[in-house]
Image (cartoon, rainbow, N blue to C red; front, top):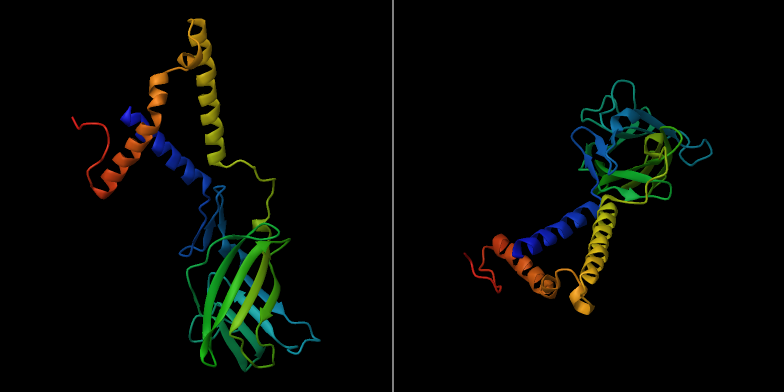
Length: 252
């Protein structure tokens, strides 16, 4: 009975693991592993540019980026001595590295359209602080920079805080998402089986002439079930913390 209670506790832990979505972004190969099992290669987004409108206070500004590799050649900041992933170019002589190093990409978060990945880059010094650039990737029709938000918007001036939104169709759902998680399926199967056990068990006991509480299958076991769960939890705790288990059972 003690083993059964322990197994029941383990099943509850397994269900918790299945019910909690775990989403990881692998910074080593620049791929995102989704909870549906799909792997998205962020390097396929490639080189992108964003041009501020000509009526803006910064009419010549270009924001250029490569998410997974440094800008090269004739690309803005392509000749920088330090590898640069994100560049702000106001003119041929005014190019600012907004993203020199990428920290471990931050957690996946839900957006209004779908899910998006959020990455943070650290750039050169801007005054007394390093530039921080957050890149959010969300569902969109094609790979493009949708918007750029900067704390400071002046010609030939840097901004400490920057946010870039990229739209990519790789994060658009091709089909409606299922409303049931692995934990939901587990609970449905578990409680349906549990209900069938009681219904058929009581029917059999009634056929045998038993009535009332005596008709409950394995009534003695269910009377002691709370104590068994307590013992099971205490047993697992004792194994984890290597302490003596306190229960009504004697070790053999």
